[in-house]
Image (cartoon, rainbow, N blue to C red; front, side, top):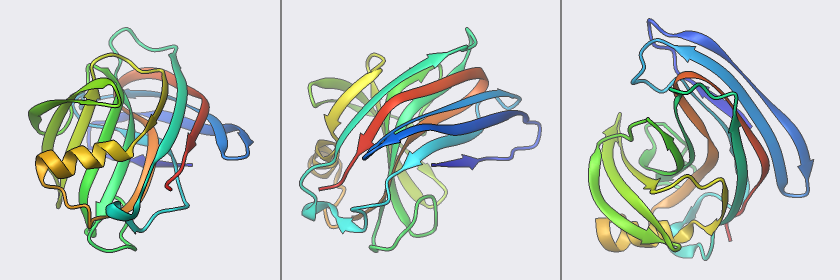
Length: 205
């Protein structure tokens, strides 16, 4: 588990994150927060990160199966946040997330509560039987593609590999890129809430 925290002037708040249970490759966990100031800026990304199966080219990956069951509670009526996967690509197998070695960031938003993805919408796509709005933007030195679900997905069971197949065929993302990070968590922008994950698994095959 991890938490990327961003420190902008004029931001105040607090956040706690804890693991609740482990069973084999399944984890349950929760994060609770309250943030104010700079409502358009992400405050943190509390997440669980996969450690096995990374550093492989997309062309060599057959499937990326995942399940994620979650709930939001004690959420402010005007909460601004997402619930999302964050996957990172690099030109090198030992690249890292959110670094100068990053080439692409792929976000899959299962929930969008008044938040705005980076960039602007460039397409719509149906992947895994679900409709997604596709956004493209630029952050620091890497491109960001965000897939935003048309409705909130609180019980998600899917293969993430088709997202990369789509990006390759429709947006020119090379399958020779290396998958170097796979994370799942929430990005709060403003107000308070508690994300509880009752069951999460992910693998790269």
